[in-house]
Image: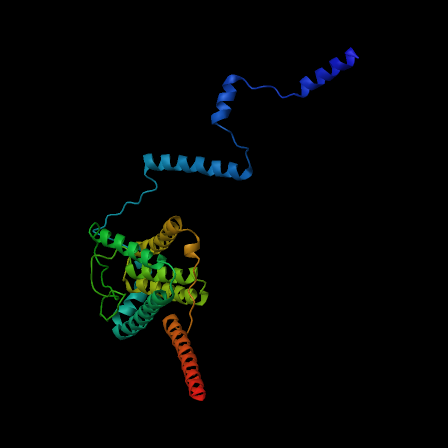
Length: 293
């Protein structure tokens, strides 16, 4: 029996995990080394080589371009010079395209504003556009750049609410592109997909015309897209933190019936019913009195 008990104790001590030292206990208490997976190994490799590249680029300057230019030179303009000259020389054709695009942009932005004002359930659209314009106004006092030379976009001016055809040094970043993108994203959030894709197609055409006609530099268009999307997402997250997720779940419903008129009609119908009932009751009481006399 004693030998069997000794064997059991020996097996139990062998299977029992060894206790860590006091030093290892303190380290494991604050630093828990995760289990390595292929995903984490790939991330570590990317981080390692990315850091090495940044160090080498800092000391050698291989990632920095050096050109002797007076002010600004947009490299894609060199590849679109022939088609730009066509628009610049044919002013009537260029004016017709600008009129059509401006009309579509103005109508769609105004339509979005009206629909949001009547059926919107949150202030995400308003706050996104406000913060986008506010930062753009601040940038105008900090950044001035020369208008692109021989711009067909500002060659002949037409009236537009949201597209500026005037020659100006305040064009970073593009207001039209960002506001139009915010409108399209608002339709997307409200699950009106056909409006989103219509505005997205018009946005792509407007970007192409801006590049061809030299209305904006390439970096102004890219930053407008990035900032417009960023300000929309940022305002959405801030509103979610303040009011909760349920506040942003409201969906725009394009109903034909106006709620105010509908409520007014229902109230008037109820008043008419009550008035008719009171008249019938009073006439009934009056007739009864006459019969008694």
